[in-house]
Length: 311
Ligand code: HBI
Ligand code: FE
Image (cartoon, protein in one colour):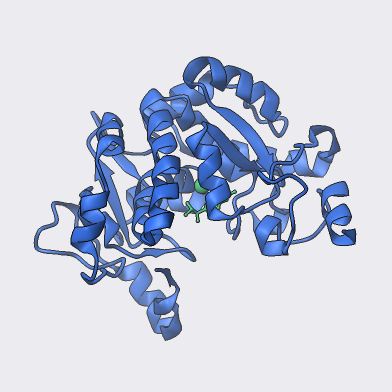
């Protein structure tokens, strides 16, 4: 209880870990907390501003048109960390979604239950000035700047809800790892083809300065036409840039994905082997064959880095 009080009463202190990772137990069963908007300090708003301005300079011509349009219509600006209630008012009218505050990572079933009900759980805390470029847990910048503009799009809105429903089902079937890869390579790290070339729609890219550039401009990663079964069998990196990005033709493709019955796919790939993040297959449709230089260099530095992929 003491720990609970401390973590929730002073939500903006210096602890590095939040939510599940900090060993917290929630007050409410759905893990939501008050955003506590008035508790943000000037220093915290300043971190938001730094991040916001960096990304806003970089994203025109790189983020997909839907991201830019969503951002424009939301009460999100450089000066202050957004207020979730004001975001929810606009989102609710557009696609029926809400943003709710959570202390950090929440258990899978809690996460899915929110998504299945069109509530997006957003970390209420913001990273510290020394962790601008790398953070283990989703904070308010990743969740709000990266995810919320996309939730203004009806296709993404339906797709993420379907992921929540599918997540609960996949958990019961013991195949969550397969489904989580689909989320990872679409909602978090997806690229989409637009008239003038590849663009970002994944929140993990859109909220990262370095990965924005790496994913689109660097010769190192593979850029592969999205294929559902292929992605379900592909491990991903949680500690570094992706070695492969998967590309969809347009966001409506996700709507079709949301309608697919995954059960037969889980059965078909059960027992088949997984692919490593950088592996290319003869059946892949390649947009870019990566040089692999970035991750090869890292593996030379520390061979054990190869193992830090997510099952
Ligand atoms: N909790 N707050 C939060 N945000 C996430 O993105 C999240 C989570 N809990 C579980 C989870 N993601 C993933 O591991 C699932 O998508 C599988
Ligand atoms: Fe995310």
